[in-house]
Length: 173
Length: 80
Image 1 (tube, chains in turn orange, cyan):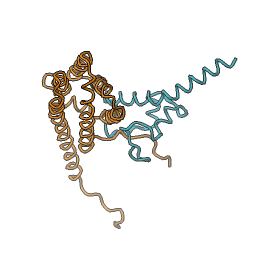
Image 2: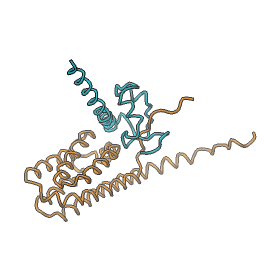
Image 3: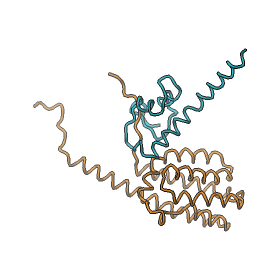
């Protein structure tokens, strides 16, 4: 028999979403403080522009690229290369969640703007408040995603349990 | 005389280094465009054809390697 060759695109899971979110938050918290000292007015303008575009686009691909460029500005200025590397790895894992985000928040007008809020506070020099405000909105998004995935998971389980149990192969007919 | 051969070899080496990155980018784009959906099976041959990488090319090897993208899961090798 020919062995199975290929791959499966990993399914989304509430546990993975939470792990990624918590790790991302920790990395962002660690990077924002050192980055703030090196961010110039031009950097703030660029980051804000990227944040605004990322919140408004309806394309998952564009959102991914804008989000990456936004965090590249912050992590580059933080000069914490290991944090940046790990953050990018998590970004890759998060790719599968980007289309779901747009489905859960289809309306651009009321889409969460955590990145813009972060920059607004950082511009004023309020670093702790920036992180706090970012965290609050970010966690709301994450919990919305987790709730959705939990509901889907429960529905799939219910559907599976409603099927008649499979007969044991060892039982003689 | 050796110049063009050396250059060709260098180009090939650069191509080998670049290919996995290009494949990663193409898979990522396919996920973002929802051409690949979470939980979907991606047969190696189909991936190879889709990304235009033949069995002997580095891209094909990348799809089988442990270095491949983090969102993929192989039933043979497990999660990585």
